Amino acid sequence: MAPLFQHRLRPLRDIVSSWEESNFEVKNYLTGWYWLSDGWYCLQTDDGDVPLAHSAFVASLGLSGENALYLDYQVARFWMDLVEVVPAALESLPEPFAEWVVSGVWPAWVAEVQTWWQALDDEDPASSDETWDDLFAARRWWNARHIDMGYLVAPPGLRFWCLGDTVTLQWDTRDRLVEGRPCWVEKIGQQEMSVSSFEQEINSFRRRLDQDMGSRIQEVESLGLLSAEQVAGLWRQHEEILAMRGRWEGTDWQEVKAAVAYLEHLSGISVKACGGSQPGVRSFSDGP
Image (cartoon, rainbow, N blue to C red; front, top):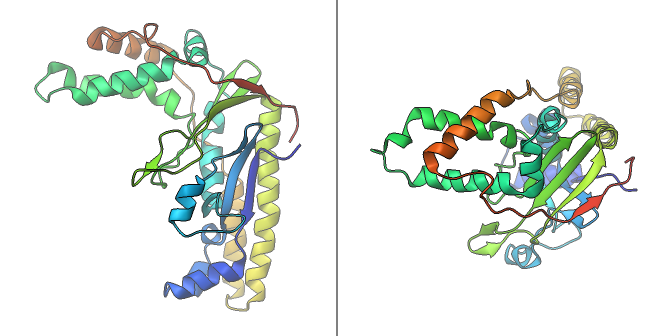
């Protein structure tokens, strides 16, 4: 089975040409491992590649070619954001949060409470710092399981959570508009895998990125533009970034429950009363 996390590096000659056309100092950028990871990436799911750019949106940008439909950015950014969510993604959800997430009522409640909060008048006692702190506490654990793609104008929704020995990946690329046009092929769905399979997928991505970026450093060195010290600096960045781990310290579920209860009371919006829907679940075979 093909790996879940897919990537392809842009040819170095194309990266250098784009820097030259933009009048960037090429030598300075060659010393940055992050910049050298420019390329394309996606998640290869049973529902196809996610996210996948909408063909009409791609056409409006005048893009073409086999990579035009894929997310185009530094692959290092995706790796760094992915490993940041791993510790939270592997923290098994307790009840009632597990039930709320599976049924879909939790994200619906979060959206409704956020809308309520944003509509409050500044003079309303409910718009206090205390209420904001509880809103932050109530949703922090949920946000920690979401891959942050805030560098995009219309980021897709990609999230992981764990129940026992099962990790669920959920994607949602609906209603992401840029200048009124759908940015992505609109999909919502989810896919399950064992904890061990998820860890294997992370390790597979690390190994493949290690190999590709190792070859990239050697290619940069062959240009003869960098000193031995600068090349050594690239190898140090290579090791440091690929060794990154998330910093999640765990969830204080009693604090979350207290925050949710306070917000339910204040807003009049009950979690259980919120409508929710669960995307179809697809089984994910073990192993990358």
